[in-house]
Amino acid sequence: MGGDRLRLVIVAAIAVAVMLALEPVIIRSGGFQMRWLLAGSALFVLLGATGRWDRPGCRIPFRLGLVACAMGDLLGPRNFQMGVVCFLAAHLAFCVGCWGHGLQGGRVLRWGPVVLAFSLGLVGLWLWPHLPVGDRPLVTAYTAVISVMALMAAGLGRSPVRAWLWWGAWIFYLSDIFVARWRFVDPSSANGLVCYPLYYLACTLLAWGTGMNWRDSDERPATEEMS
Image (cartoon, rainbow, N blue to C red; front, side, top):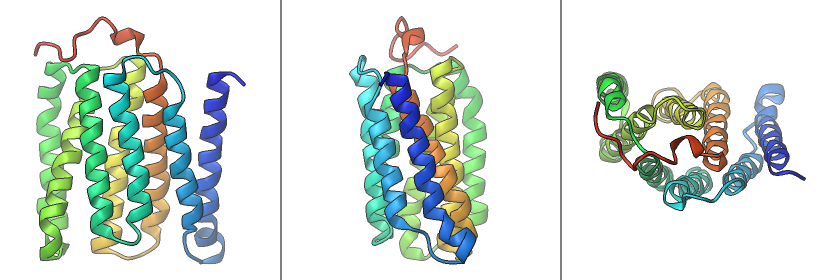
């Protein structure tokens, strides 16, 4: 089986796993099937491991980030704080991968105020009043790191592979808004019906982009001069 065909099969398997995980909630008013969600997590790690392995300094951080996400999926339902730590580590790894891939300083500067306003509004105006005091430091740190990750993804530019990483990063951010709403604002399972598909879509996009040909940026330095 060719490389791209295998990767498409894995993507289809991720979609099936997520649908099976959500089916009891949608059809039978039951609970989310964690075994299928964990299967989806294992599959996006596998998807990230396929494809190209050149430029390891750029690709390996993304692959390690996907592994950290899967660890968060495993540990988070049992220990929320441990799950947050795993995802925080994942976003730090994605930041390293973005830095190694190459940033366009002008785009970082243009997107900076947008990301700052979004993150301050999200935490300061909406989420903060709902946060237990003990969770505030960790949630604040997590929000800061995922915001930096989203900003660095926005700074990657517009080549085909970068579009995958850009969309993956920002859809990940969007999914976490519903995770926060589910955890701290509204315990309705409707939040899970939104955050899980978004999250697995984000990880699939990041995993696919990780294995793509990055030829378009092979001639670029790790970080371009600000323009």
